[in-house]
Image 1 (cartoon, rainbow, N blue to C red):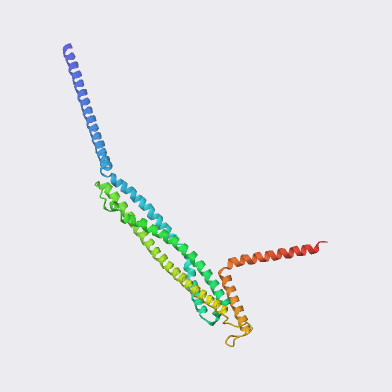
Image 2: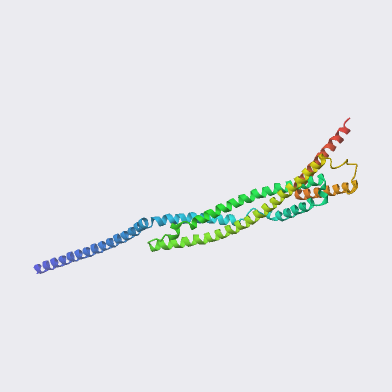
Length: 302
């Protein structure tokens, strides 16, 4: 009986030992399987990264260039959306052309037979030319900026690498194509807006150039008439001023014409330089008031 019990204990111990080893072997095999899967996943990720870094290094640089183009195009679009600083020129060029034509007509009438009248017209033309020269400088600055924008926009169309790059990886290829599409749409918007503004500024420049050319022509014509007056005066073609030629009007008509011309000139310069003349008038009132105040103050002193 004692031997049987001892045998039973040995068999039971052997069973538990064997079972423990089996469980340990199963645990070890499962651990090795998990480690193998992890190493395989890491290897796969490393392979993808290596393929990105090796095969698509040029694509990464092209993506950076796309970002630079995007910043440039957005800047151009925002600047154009703010509008061009040409409102003053656009509003005043029609009246300027009208005034030059009016001076041209006045220079060809009988009133231009006096030096006074010619010098007044010449003075008006000088002011017009000065204003037109300022407008030309402003328009040239705007035109230079638009031309620089157009050159920046043309660089994109000439960038063959951007337009022909084909990434080998499908994920990176999709990212690159989507970004390139966005930049192309942005380029179309900026290029269209810049071309329209460039066309408008060129038309405005042409109108200013025509006005300036007409002003120069009228200036030359008036200078020629003034020189002719001087030649005729030195040659003794005209008699003394008290010997009035019957073909000319009397002195009253000349005085009235001079007064009308002066009033027209005064209205023109006040209307064109209202702010300047208003400041001058206020300053004149202050000076006169100060003088009167000091005179009154001096009279009251003992």
